[in-house]
Length: 451
Ligand code: IFM
Image (cartoon, rainbow, N blue to C red; front, side, top):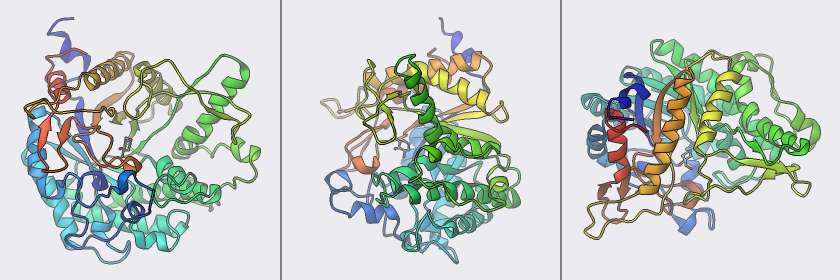
């Protein structure tokens, strides 16, 4: 490969971006009328989040976004995927909106535009207003309608400033980690609530698509899913079946309704105690409203095997791959398989974006404190981008890639102990140090570095 190979691996109009989420980077938790979110509450639950870390200050992007945008510009990214904090817009989750919250996102979008960076806004990245959890949260059908009301406000007030909408980020995490496993806010452990939450999140997505189409018809709308396309541990039938059942729970349950297909019923038939959600007459059509793109968040490809000792009868098994600081295996070829599977399963009906990909590394600053050498992240990004380039060469309709994350941030139940950023955050003084991986990405984007 030589210098000229670079631009050909990715089309000129490929949308290069970086991603974050409101609760993970904004801080300013009590400013300008922001209400309490379920994550503010969860962080204060003893033992829920590592070291009792909170999102109160985080990397203070609320006040420091000009500096972060300058860094994005220096990397050469074309789009910033951020999320809008519902409790900034509707502090109690309903009713009139908080002007200061809207103004913040306007300022952010205007600054992005001035820097030549498009605004890709996620409307829900897990920070439900606590007031809505008090009335039942996502397991309550009404929450989907409250979400649509909030989206309608965002569309009306921010529509002219946003270039692309993402309704939900990873509804599997909101529903299952939040309401079945209790590892995420609001920390509930109840299968029935979990599947009701999943259905209402998807319903909220469908209603949101309607609201966005009505207010900002020219702006593309999509959703970001963390689907799994696991490999079976062996070719033995029981393992092949195990991997397929894993896909029911993690993948088909969230993707098929968007495609106008029913929820996979096999899981609920096998586990009568896991009650399927109650589905009203028009729900399926509402959920399956056409979208303009599908966002995929890919971190790794699990290996799944039959396990009679596991409550579901199958589980993730160890693999030979090296792991990141999250303990997640590094499987770049899995991304290539993933893109192929999803594209085929969706009958190629919409373009795909990788809306998250990246890895946690135990980064340290150089002795003089001005550099952060992160070769493991460069290796991760290079190999995953190569898999994406191969998928493109195969004809997969992949339109863009957003690296998770722009900057180190609050990694949910792990608090600030995991660093995913292209930029190192010093949590004591809020100094930003651009990591080597950001320079690497800059080279790839400019076409100077083939992957
Ligand atoms: O930090 C998260 C993000 O909020 C959602 N997707 C996975 C990331 C890494 O765990």
